Every structure is written in C-alpha cells, then in structure tokens.
Amino acid sequence: MRHYSLLVTKTRRIVLIGRTGAAKSSLANIIFGHTFNSETRECRAETRSVNGRCIMLIDTPGFFDTDMTEELKTETMRCITECTPGPHAFLIVLKVEKFSMQEKDVFKKICEYFSDEAFKYAVVVFTHGDQLPEGMTIEEFVQQNQGLSDLVRKYSGRCHVVDNKHWNNNRPNEYRSNQLQVEKLLNTIDKIVMENNGGYYTNEMLQTVEREIQEEERIRLSLGNMTQEDETQGLCIIL
Image (cartoon, rainbow, N blue to C red; front, side, top):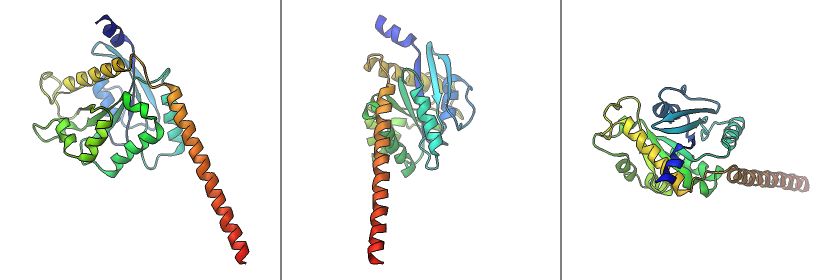
C-alpha cells in the first residue's frame, strides 16, 4: 500500500492527442477546471493538483488533422519529447459520434508515429458524453461498432467518457457525472503507472520511431527520384 501511495504522489505527465474538434481543451478544462482555452495551434502544458494527485496536462494541436502542416507536426513531436523524461499516459480523445474514416485515420497515424509500446500507456477518452442515449454506458457504445471495439481493445479496453455541457458535477455517485468520470479516469492512469512499474513512454522510444519514419521518407523520396530518372531516360530513348 505504501508503494501505491508513493506512486500517486508523483507528477503524472499526460499528453492529450486527437483531431481538431475532438474537444481536447474541453477535456483539459473538465480535469483542471477551466484552465485551457479552446482549440490550440501550439502545444501547452499546465500542472495542477487534482483529487490529491499532481497532474501535468500537455495539450497538443490537431496532430492527426489531414491538413496539418509539417511545422505543426514537428511542434507536437517536440512537445512530447520535451515532456521530460516522458509521458506516463496518452489520452486519445474522440467524440461520441459515428466512428468515421477520420477517426480510423487517428489510430492509423498513432501506429505510424508511435511504437507498439505506446498502447501500454494510452487511454481512449470520449467527449460530448451527452450524445450517449439515456441509460447507455460508453462501453456499450463502443461495443456497437466492431471497428471501434477492436481499436479500443488494443488499449486493453481502457475507455472513459466526459462532457462539460450537460452532466451534473454535483452527483458523484451517478454515471452521468464528470466528477465521477474524472476520478475513474485518474484511477485508470494510476493503474497504468502501476502496471508499468512507475515507468513512462521514453524519449528514446519516440525518437526511434521518428528515425524509422525519416528513413522511410528518405527511401520513398529516393525511389521517387529513381522513377523520375527512369521515365526521363525512357523518354530520351524514344526521341
């Protein structure tokens, strides 16, 4: 029990990841209590005490937006790598809505930019919980879609839901209460830290993936240049 107490008193470094419009900043507001502004185009970090825990939240731009520039991607990766010595948890933020190709792309890009180790540190958090039908839990919502269910299963089934629009924070024992849901989320993060023996997703893990991505990009460009040269040589022969 003493070991557990030591873990929960240390600062939890938590990175919010998701598309623009997924309400990442709203989630930060729910956890902290109106600290972050609306959607950001740059990384921001804030540390506060929440339910007896020291929490650092790192809010990122819409890292998986289809129109995100390389500059913003670099800014986001820099923010994560500078979360020294590494984040204890990633919150993959999605809205309670139909699971579209855009949401599938989020998970695809997570696999591209992070190693498989990241799954050990990640939780799926749904915002806009007021969209859930009355009486339905987030687990039941996830089970309705096979693709979404399969993806959440990759994160060991870890999923939570919040909403800062309609849910009453003054009813801590009811499912539709942000107060209850935030405590559940923080308990899950505590469990992740325990399961990883107090560890975190290290910069080395991220940098290894970055090197692999850069190598793949170098090969792709090299092959592209070779193709262009072949086409040019073929054209010269015909002429």
